Image 1 (cartoon, helix red, strand yellow):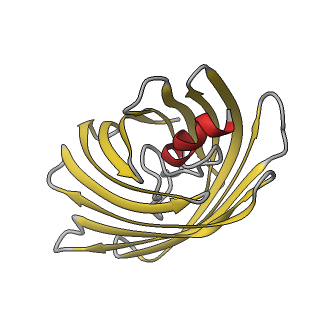
Image 2: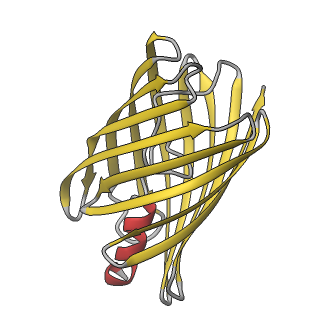
Length: 218
C-alpha cells in the first residue's frame, strides 16, 4: 500500500492539509467572522486506480478558522482513509497588501497505524496591482510523519484575478519529500460559490483535479 500510494501522497500533499483547499499552497486569509464553508475536491493521477478525495468543512470561531478534514486515498486495489482537525490564524499589518498567519493540522488514519501526522506552517500573502488583482503566496513549515520523521514544507504560488468570475492559479510546492507543479483556473458562480479545475505534474506523475467551495453566513 505504501508503494502504491506514494504518487497520491505526492498529489494530495499528505493527510494533514491545513486550509489550502483545492491547492496545496495556502493563502494568508481566513473566513470572515460568522462565516462557514465546505470544500470538496478530487485529484486523479493519469493512471488507473489512483485517486484522492477530500471533504473539509470550516468556520470562523473566535477570530480563528477551525476546520475538519476527511480524506480517502485509493491506489491500485488498496484504500487509505484519514480524518483530522486544523486551525488557522491570520494578521493583516496592511489590509489587502500584506497578511501573515500560522496554521496547524493534525490527522490520523482511521484504521491501522493511527499515530498522528502533524503539519505546521506559516503562510504569507502579498497583493500587487492597482486593485490587488495579483496575489503572491509563500508557505514555510514542516510535517511530522510518525513513520518517516520530520519533513520540511515550502510552497510558492500566484493568483491572478481576471474578473469577479474568473481567476488563474500557479503553484510549486514541496511536501513529505515530494514536489509538485500545478496550474489551474477558478470560476466563481457567485460571491460565495466557486469551482476549480487544475492539472499538475512532477517526476513523471501527472494529475487532474476538480474542486468545489461553498461559503455561507451563519
